[in-house]
Length: 273
Ligand code: NAP
Image (cartoon, rainbow, N blue to C red; front, side, top):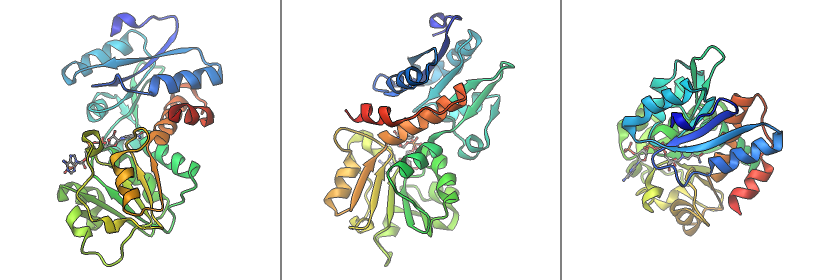
């Protein structure tokens, strides 16, 4: 990895395992072209055992910043010399940046990316009843920004109850507990488990969605995801998937690295084309 880092041009990239499918290089190339920034952005497939060593080498050789994806987000939080408050809250880092003094800053732009995408889609969660399915790293990143919008209710349901309760306190529960509620469906349901990667959806009552529900899947697929298909089949009024969040979290990373936030309109069109 370090051999590919030339010093003449600002170098960025995305680190994951696997990472071949990542749309981030295309998105950042569009942002760079649109804003006149001279940079390169590559993919780096690093196994967990190689992550810390290779990322250290990337920055030591002059690399400026990295996006971090599955399964490295928690390791990246430990590797960073300093965390932004939102990364500390999330306990996970999706953006690393080399500071002027050589130290590595860890940030988490997932929550800001989701909020920007919900705003773009005209979904205001203030005073709405919101359910999050899943209590992993992604939920840790989005929970604070969602709470800041003051929903009427914010429930986290997860396969493992302890993880849901650790994140959400008394409003954390297991999927089965939702079936006992009298006040279904929810206004907004956000799917944040990794089950979509296996073509599955959580084992949850279909009563969580109805004609007034906006169902948003953090995962993405063409033309739909297992969860958006499931939600549509069970009567959700509106569905969306996380490719828009991917574009918006990338714009937040770009802002951290380059000091300006690109217009995302063209990138949104390109990723769904
Ligand atoms: P993670 O930390 O590995 O968490 C996985 C979650 O899925 C946990 O809640 C886990 O429940 C649940 N889960 C896994 N297998 C399950 C099963 N068989 N049955 C029921 N629940 C199961 O993953 P993550 O980082 O939070 O990512 C979650 C999803 O969000 C991924 O699809 C990721 O690609 C997506 N994401 C998208 C964006 C974007 O920009 N669009 C950004 C971040 C993440 P337990 O706690 O019970 O194990």
